[in-house]
Image (cartoon, rainbow, N blue to C red):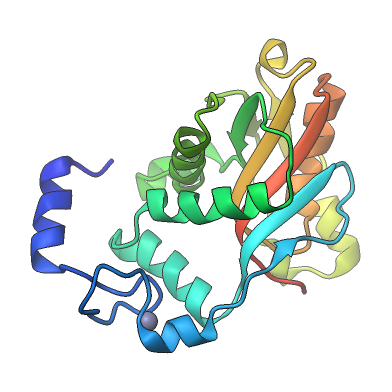
Length: 215
Ligand SMILES: [Zn+2]
């Protein structure tokens, strides 16, 4: 978790940098002129099984890939800035306010190994932005899966069978849930999560991601 001292030093050393490419910008703006020119908004996504509706902010392209990389590798992009964009995308479609926000879970070994649960940090920022409770330990990943983009269509859904489990069904039952992820590719992963949530009695499941790539 970042400390406020770190944030202060970072702001001093890097007064204003572009979220997309890290170039210095003269004003407190999020993007440099070049990245601003390349920004495209995605909005509502095509239907995904088990998901009532899904939205994303940007396509997975040079700018959004840069943002996600800079967030993960250097921590120069704040989850709060991403969450603000995600809230705008969400409200543009008048999705109902959820009762509970959940991250797409990572395997516990992975978060232990990397020391960070990036998905959780992003979902936490979105939950704060929406002023909606964040579900911690509600949905879990119980086995390793191969990266979805390395598999063909058939193997993708098989890869996720039994991968996720609801650990706290009492927190899910009857709830309107928003699943948060940094990138949605085919939607198989959030669909598998939503299937488990609905099986445990969730009323509706919506999804919101920062980037979207159709492969
Ligand atoms: Zn830039």
